[in-house]
Image 1 (cartoon, rainbow, N blue to C red):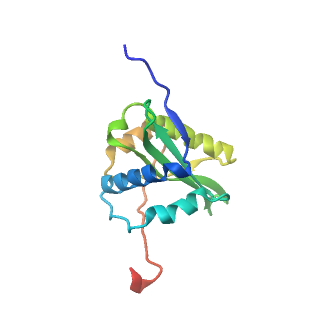
Image 2: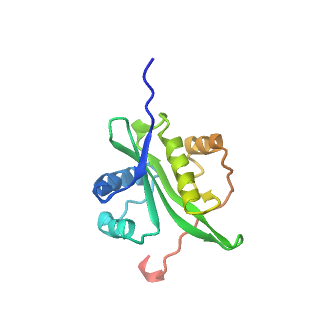
Image 3: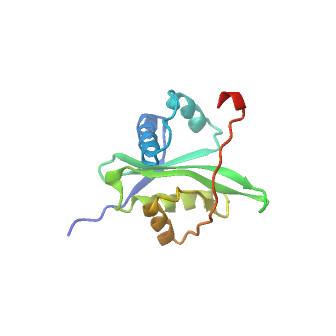
Length: 159
C-alpha cells in the first residue's frame, strides 16, 4: 500500500508569481476562454501582494513540493443579504494533480479563510459544461444556483 501524503495548502508568496501565472494560463485554456493580454504578472503581482490587498491566493503543493493548483479569493458584498461573503474567483488544479485530494484540501482552506475573515459563506461559479467540477462541488455538499454571467465593457468603443 502506498503511503498517504497530507496535502500542503499555503498562501501565495511573491516568489510564486511565475508559477501562478503558468497555472492561470492553463486554466484559461482549460475553460476555452480568450487568452489574456500580455503583462498579467505585472498587473496581478502588485494587487495580490500589496500590504493591504483584499485578495488571497491559496496554493496546493504536491508531495514533491511543486505548486500544482490554486484558489483565488476576495470579499464581495451581497446586497440582498446585506453582508459580505468570500468570493472564490478561481479554483484550478493542473491535470496531473487531480484526483489526489488537493481540490478538497483547497476547498477546506478556502472555508477556513472565510472563517478567519469572519465571513459566513463562500460563493463561486463554474461553467455549466464542467461536469467534473460540478460533481466535485456536489460531493462537498455545495448547492448550485442557475445563473448566467455577463460582461459589458465600460467603454463601448474600447471593447
